[in-house]
Length: 143
Image (cartoon, rainbow, N blue to C red; front, side):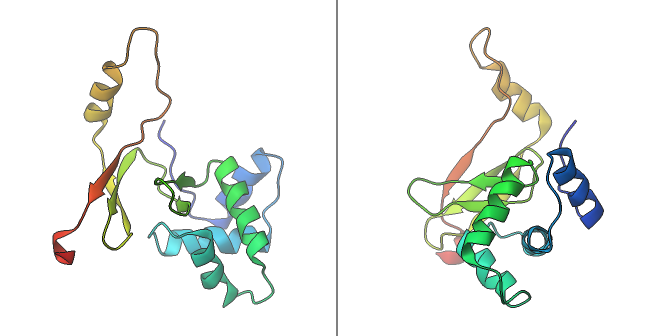
């Protein structure tokens, strides 16, 4: 079964509860901000977005919320070399395109047969639980 992003606060609360945690207003706000604008923001970008709605939230709280959401498998971390960690609420199998000029990251859908073919290339007795593919380049719109 493919994991999907949980769009409702009830679904978020259930996933957190399954991990022995509770849905706090801060966690809900951080998660909602990731779902509203799926542009793979950094923690600092998430902080700037949620601060307008919750002025008392701290950057440390945003980092803690993001870490909790990753641990509960509600979002994924996207890392590229020495760049800041970015966060992605798209839990379907997909690749990322990293625009080297703008720093933007875009989702690239991967068909299931392609992923199966990749996994079939593994040596005997190796079983992948996930496949991460990142394309590097530039968008023609930025040429």
